[in-house]
Length: 447
Image 1 (tube, rainbow, N blue to C red):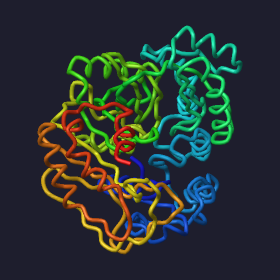
Image 2 (image 1 turned 60 degrees about the horizontal axis):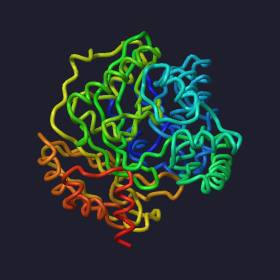
Image 3 (image 1 turned 90 degrees about the horizontal axis):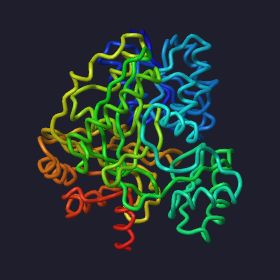
Image 4 (image 1 turned 135 degrees about the vertical axis):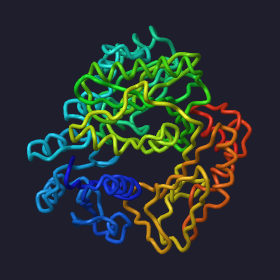
């Protein structure tokens, strides 16, 4: 087991990893920018190192400074959390060159799955169902028209090198295709420095289903069930739940088994999430995230397994702590992402939190790094906390969530709490009857 882990992140995920390390008796080091000097994870860590000014490129994305912090403090491993350098293959390679363990997959696996086109090819080779579309990047408009005619409109053009909705455009007909291609390439080049795009069939009313997987790097793989992440705004997840209200036990076991076998065949090490669009009983691969997900607590709630403990165990050479037959699913869990944003316009709302009170009681978990008096800086992601609720079934979970949202108080800034209070009372949400377009339509109707 590791002696000292450096946590190369901030906010709630840094605190989440820190708590896991403490439970395992591992010393912790956190890095922080000058803007985060008073952050909770900095206060609670055994050691902290300031690595630069507020901009991420000068601090949390500064590989040289993070490696130097490891060498200064004697950290023998780095947990990257999510975001920032968590899916940076170069970072993983540099750590390996310095004999520091990256708590995650190899740089090669990050590279394979970080390229959307190569990831799709790999998924097909591993027996994972994929969305019909181009086999690689599409460079000529004539070629794009031919492919779109074969798979049928509407089609979606996606950036090969990125995500988060950037470089992603829908074409409903051949007349729309040329403009969509130009716009997607332009956005992709500006956002990712790579204007390569590919084409896929655009599904009309799909769910977003993702499967949590783990590999030991030596040919063993397991899955921890699926999460439904269909409630999204601009391709950003807002509400996640497990298990999905849309799947039955047979579908759940089937897609989980497919993903676990694929991870084993790939020789993958650590946590990963294989994401799908799901429509009319069929699964279509979107991408694989080679890291811990923001929404991992809902999986922890229904399995009772600490996924960060598992990450650390696998990275230290201890292998997986469970076999597939050991993993059991209990009840239902929902996570709401609480952002420092206006609940209607979603404009960021940095500032000082004057009062912060979290809900409690059976089945309630709040992952957050903020506190009363904490000043939210304007430089980073607006996520300030996650409310995770667990119940014996979805009905009980929804009732518990409604109560927890009523108890949650954040004063001094605007947050998305009012949005969730509206959603929990909506009939479609109560019935689990929604797709990836539902939330944006709901918000548009309320304007």
